[in-house]
Amino acid sequence: MTLPPEIFKAYDIRGVVGKTLTTEIVRAIGQTLGTLALEAGRDALVVGRDGRLSGPELAAAVADGIRAAGANVIVTDNRRHFLAALRHGIRVETPPEFLRTIKMRRG
Image 1 (cartoon, rainbow, N blue to C red):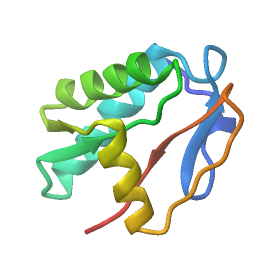
Image 2: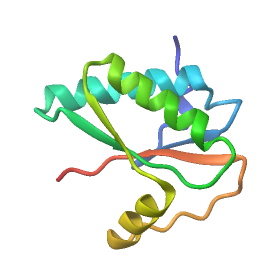
Image 3: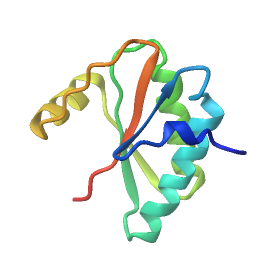
């Protein structure tokens, strides 16, 4: 599968749901992230989402990809994800058709 290069930004992955971010693309990204996490000595990744209608499907796809790589997935609900983002000073305001899918942080 060829991933659309325009979704890869300096600090995250962003795209249009259903066009540049499909469940297949997000699953492939999840599998790559799971592989990278395992190579870095991490065995689990946290998956959170906001309240957008596309959230459940894409969160499930990224979690499936992470598990396919052999890593564990910790799924958070919307409230916990929001509070964790606030704690780290992350604020995201994007239109509903756009989605910032993945933000990586070491720690």
